[in-house]
Each structure stands twice: as structure tokens, then as C-alpha cells.
Image (cartoon, rainbow, N blue to C red):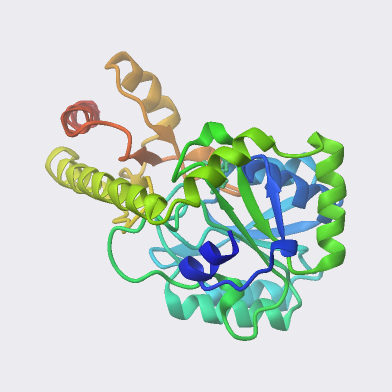
Length: 319
Ligand SMILES: Cc1ncc(COP(=O)(O)O)c(C=O)c1O
């Protein structure tokens, strides 16, 4: 795991600094349990990963969604918030690579800026990175914790999107020893340990030279083609006024329909046409932008992607 992290995201970690968790979702829960008290603030992108928001809310923390665009969280928004907030947030939660739900990645210059701002305000950063390996083009960017001057950066990876979600094997890098011990104690209280059986399966798989890399390369090729099919279908099928992100990796893209649409209502109409998408509203922190939706491009065949988008286009044109 340590050599994998060094090779893929430039993160130097020792085995002691890694906590194996039962999926990265458990790590989100454990971090929230250990770090967050009722009323604490967690700063994040907007929209943000729903499962993380739920984990933070379960401990009565309050999420603050900051302005984000096609290059990810805006550093100026983070700085302005930290300078003006009377309450210091406890955590900055980010998905810098192919974010869930938007598919957007945090641009390299912004990473350096955000790391510097977080260090200046002694704000711990949790980098959630389930999708980073699913890169279709461009060079891999280092983990936030690998940037010069980074402090208190936690890094979270998982086997879920590169091997199988059912394994429930993930890895959390925690450099701070006191925090790591608290997380380990909380983990023991929750489930004693992550299944040693599935850990052995992952270990058996990854220790064979080149096997994981070859598998990930296959995934990237298949998903890249499906992303291209979906982008072409969106251009062909959706009416004027619709926009969408252009992810360079991951599983998702994010569509914004013309103002006035509510995708939660639209889903019921779509279901009658035997198509589905994820309505955008629950991903927003604060006031939801109701004309947004998340599409997954990795899981369906080209024919089904084309047919699904044709049906969505017909529904939208019907009004
Ligand atoms: C950003 C993000 N974090 C964490 C998870 C949880 O993944 P797992 O618990 O399967 O590792 C997901 C799953 O979709 C995700 O998208």
C-alpha cells in the first residue's frame, strides 16, 4: 500500500500511518465521530458527495458549501470564508479528482493555493480519492498532502472503484499519531477490524506485479470510450440550454438543465420511460440547485447510453 501511494499520488507514508477501514465510507464516519462535535463547521465543495454530508450531519456538524466551478473549489472563496468566519471550521473535505457528483477535478495551481491557505489557518484537510486512478488523459496530480508546506492532510483511498465495492477495503493515511490512535479506537468499537478475508483477497491481487495496473488500464479504456459516447449523445440529444461537465476521468458527469426544471420531479417522468439518473438536489449544501442531475457513464453499454439519452432528450423537449 505504501509503495502504491508513493507511486500513484506521491504520498510518503509508513505502514503505521495507514488505517485500513471497511470501505472509505467507514473512514468518513470515523473521522466525523472523532473530530466533530455538534455545531462544528466542515467546509466543502458545492455540490458535494452526499455520503460525506450524511456522515458529518450524523454527528450534528454543519457543512458549509463554498463556490466551485469547472476547476473545483475556488481558493478565493475558501480564503474569504476563513478570514470572515467567527467560528473556525474543524475540517476541509475535498474530492480533488473526478469529484462525485460533478466529475470535475481540482486544477493543479488551486491545489497548491488551497494547501497553503489550509496550512495558514491550521485547518485539517480530508482528501477523499476513490476515483483518482480512473484517469483517461493528462498526468496524475499529487495528493494534497504531498504538496510542499502541507499540514494535517488526511488521505483516503479505496478498492471499491478499482476492484470491487463489495470487498469493503479502504485505506486512510493519518500522519498525526494522536488522531490515528483515536480513529483506531473508534474503529475497534465499530467493527473490531476490517474483514481479514477480504483484505487477503486485495493483498493477493495487488502483490502480483502489474496485475492491478493492467486492470486499471482496462477500466480506463472502457470508461473513456463510454464517457465519449455519453458526451456525443448529450450533444446530439439534449435541447438547447442544457450544459454538462467534461470529466477527464472517474464515473460521473453533471448536467444542468435550463432554469425552471426540477430533476426530482423529472425522475418520476423518466422512470415511466424506463430511464433513471440521480437528481442533483441532495448533493447541494444549503439551497439546492434543482435543475441539476448526475449521470454515470461507466456502467452501461454504448447502445444503452445512446438510447437512455435519446429518451431523456425526448422528455425534455416535450417539456
Ligand atoms: C467520494 C466518495 N467517497 C467515498 C465513497 C464510499 O466508497 P466505499 O465506502 O465503497 O469505499 C464513495 C462511493 O461512491 C464516494 O463517491
